Length: 79
Image (tube, rainbow, N blue to C red; front, top):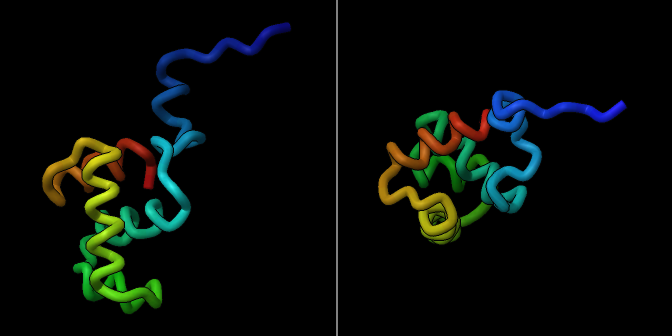
Protein backbone atom coordinates (compact mmCIF):
# COMPACT_ATOMS: atom_id res chain seq x y z
CA UNK A 1 0.00 0.00 0.00
CA UNK A 2 1.36 3.44 -0.95
CA UNK A 3 2.04 6.06 1.68
CA UNK A 4 0.16 9.29 1.16
CA UNK A 5 2.05 12.46 1.95
CA UNK A 6 -0.19 15.43 2.52
CA UNK A 7 1.00 19.02 2.06
CA UNK A 8 0.88 19.35 5.85
CA UNK A 9 3.40 16.54 6.29
CA UNK A 10 5.77 18.15 3.80
CA UNK A 11 5.80 21.37 5.80
CA UNK A 12 6.62 19.49 9.00
CA UNK A 13 9.46 17.45 7.52
CA UNK A 14 12.79 19.27 7.57
CA UNK A 15 14.24 16.34 5.57
CA UNK A 16 15.85 18.38 2.81
CA UNK A 17 16.57 21.42 5.03
CA UNK A 18 16.31 23.71 2.01
CA UNK A 19 19.62 22.42 0.65
CA UNK A 20 21.59 23.76 3.62
CA UNK A 21 24.79 22.18 4.86
CA UNK A 22 25.01 20.88 8.44
CA UNK A 23 27.16 23.89 9.43
CA UNK A 24 24.75 26.34 7.80
CA UNK A 25 21.96 24.74 9.81
CA UNK A 26 24.00 25.12 13.00
CA UNK A 27 24.63 28.80 12.32
CA UNK A 28 20.99 29.38 11.42
CA UNK A 29 19.87 27.64 14.62
CA UNK A 30 22.12 29.90 16.73
CA UNK A 31 20.87 33.04 14.98
CA UNK A 32 17.27 31.88 15.49
CA UNK A 33 18.02 31.48 19.20
CA UNK A 34 18.97 35.15 19.29
CA UNK A 35 22.73 34.75 19.45
CA UNK A 36 24.92 37.40 17.90
CA UNK A 37 27.54 36.53 15.30
CA UNK A 38 30.20 36.87 18.00
CA UNK A 39 28.35 34.50 20.36
CA UNK A 40 27.76 32.04 17.53
CA UNK A 41 31.44 32.09 16.58
CA UNK A 42 32.52 31.35 20.15
CA UNK A 43 30.00 28.54 20.58
CA UNK A 44 30.88 26.88 17.27
CA UNK A 45 34.63 27.49 17.51
CA UNK A 46 34.83 29.48 14.27
CA UNK A 47 35.79 33.06 13.55
CA UNK A 48 33.20 35.85 13.44
CA UNK A 49 34.05 36.43 9.77
CA UNK A 50 33.27 32.78 9.04
CA UNK A 51 29.88 33.22 10.72
CA UNK A 52 29.28 36.25 8.51
CA UNK A 53 30.21 34.19 5.44
CA UNK A 54 27.66 31.57 6.46
CA UNK A 55 25.05 34.29 6.97
CA UNK A 56 25.69 35.62 3.46
CA UNK A 57 25.22 32.11 2.06
CA UNK A 58 22.08 31.56 4.15
CA UNK A 59 20.58 34.87 2.99
CA UNK A 60 21.19 33.92 -0.63
CA UNK A 61 19.89 30.36 -0.33
CA UNK A 62 16.83 31.30 1.71
CA UNK A 63 16.11 34.64 0.00
CA UNK A 64 16.30 36.21 3.44
CA UNK A 65 17.71 39.76 3.39
CA UNK A 66 17.50 40.36 7.16
CA UNK A 67 17.99 38.45 10.40
CA UNK A 68 14.24 38.54 10.91
CA UNK A 69 13.81 36.71 7.59
CA UNK A 70 16.46 34.19 8.64
CA UNK A 71 14.64 33.56 11.90
CA UNK A 72 11.38 33.06 10.03
CA UNK A 73 13.10 30.54 7.74
CA UNK A 74 14.52 28.73 10.76
CA UNK A 75 11.07 28.43 12.29
CA UNK A 76 9.70 27.14 8.97
CA UNK A 77 12.48 24.52 8.88
CA UNK A 78 11.69 23.45 12.44
CA UNK A 79 14.99 24.57 13.89
